[in-house]
Length: 623
View 1: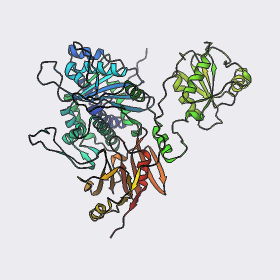
View 2 (view 1 turned 120 degrees about the vertical axis):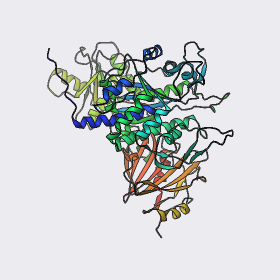
View 3 (view 1 turned 60 degrees about the vertical axis):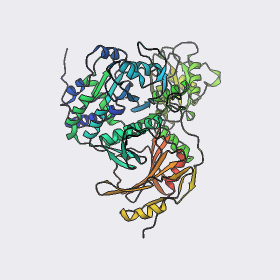
View 4 (view 1 turned 135 degrees about the vertical axis):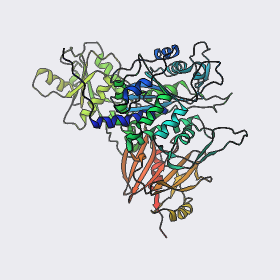
């Protein structure tokens, strides 16, 4: 036996690992990938100290977690709490205000997030307690981590591989050690306790894109007193996206030791089967760091009703929860491309393959299982593929029945056929792809003849067990007219503001039709980064959901780290930033300046409305 020693990582890898510490540390605060990694010198010590204390309760919790398969997607449950669970009778009950699932997929390089409103009423699965509906965050108070894991597993039907628990003190410390996170604050937040009835967490934030530090960041992500849990979930998920932007855009390795200390004291990572090992931690950390920001997908539970108060709890139909779980498991990385094309009335050109409706495919039986080809054909049809039958009434049988793995052949003469073959192979799971055979063998001739001119031929092998993998749900919104109205309400504010900034401002000549400029803080002029200046306009809908327009001469903001799409509209370039199929931000670049239209936290403004507001920006004249 020959044993090879693993070489020490080169300096470039050290830098990457240093950066991933912060990606994972910060993500762990809200939605971590359940790992943390520092520079090579810190990794082993840090990872080992993230393991929870060795207790009976810890082992029970660990046994509730599934072992993550190497190289396969993994799911982590992240809980943010105000104090550690100590069991019943230990004084005031602890609370878990943040309950979020995240899924990392190494194959598709995607991260999906699914949040649960803390007041959502669900059956609780806590030993010693009746399994009656209660607020989901009561699971932590009743039975700690294991009770919460079991409750989420029963609610979603998902296996959970990792559990990350983070206390709020740790959140504050990590954000401070990261030297703050750049966040787009949607409106003016202000509350100071005076001993009266409204006695809740103090907050004092101005609207606009800005760097938030520990306590202010915590106030922002926990706030819900004039909105609700659903808006708070969106606020938290946007904060996670901001962390990703921060890591990708700007990092200083000198802060590693300080963050390591905050991690050790305030974050516990449970892993299915055993303690998290260094190799696994580094693999997840590298994936998190290298993942395109556009592949971070936010999923929410639709049709949630109720006020979240005694007598009127938050409830969601089982179908809505199941639908959210399916989107969580099968994120559509082409959703932004399809949504942009739909909003603009253009034909979609996918980056990762072809629309199923553009792919023709013939399925052949290669495993001798009766009905295998017809079953595969029916399921491909259900996934919107254009299926064909062999010509001349021929039987849909492959040259032989000894195919073990399914095989997808693609016609090289057709554009993007290889990408289409890969997406079909993904549906079959254990499948290979290769060009349509062109040699003169009888088997090759038969496959080409049976293809009937289709782009793809699928030979169903023995690994096909009768069911295709679920395909991402197409959530592309139906194109609708923009809901806008003409407006010059911002013009007087901009004329006043222009004397304080060294660049030309742009006036939104159209706004969302049910919106008005915010009376509390209609405009804000402020320094944004170094010598740069910014102007923020704040609007709200009749339902008091806030959206805004940011104008600045700072073109290097972290929020610009990864646009999903770029379009030229009316002669001007626009960068489009999506959350799934919903357009969250449109950025106009003009003469070294940046003008952004930012949707509400829940992306209430339609894609067409966002685009129309952005194209309606017009320069105001200088005096």
